[in-house]
Length: 193
Image (cartoon, rainbow, N blue to C red; front, side, top):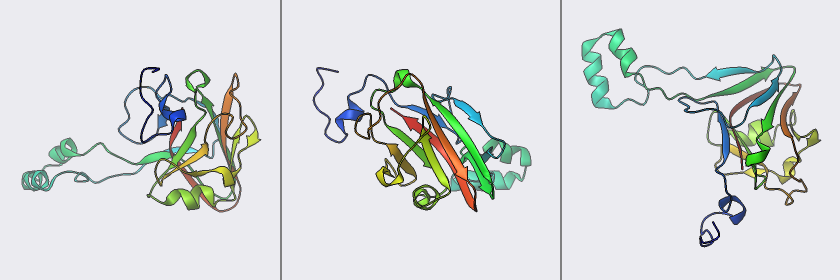
């Protein structure tokens, strides 16, 4: 890494790290093991995936061919595996999910959470939701320090160690807590670097 030039399109804190980001992806398809384990979760949270029709994201020519066959077995074979999804909780009540962040892989201190479904949903579901609280090792993360990053469906909870007054600790637990009220949360990804 020492021999590489400075990055042109990426913050050096994120690009000059010895490890790739660790990720927990609840959407389908997902390949390989999750890079961020769930430490604990209350019964209020459940895994959810959006049901799709057999012709979702299938090309028009293929749809025409399979429609002529009029065979449900072929429809099943043709079905695209892509599906939005996540850990979700909704309605009145409280609930908490805790992620055990992979400290040994975290060199920058970046923590991002993405929500589903819609490109601008993170503002209402996360940033403007007074019933949703994020904590890092039981310390409340201030939403005024958060921003949309790297896409509109994601919120950067922590920009980096030292930058936000946080230091790397031996164990780092990120908790997502619903504090009551009418609220719906659908977490699709958790990403750390």
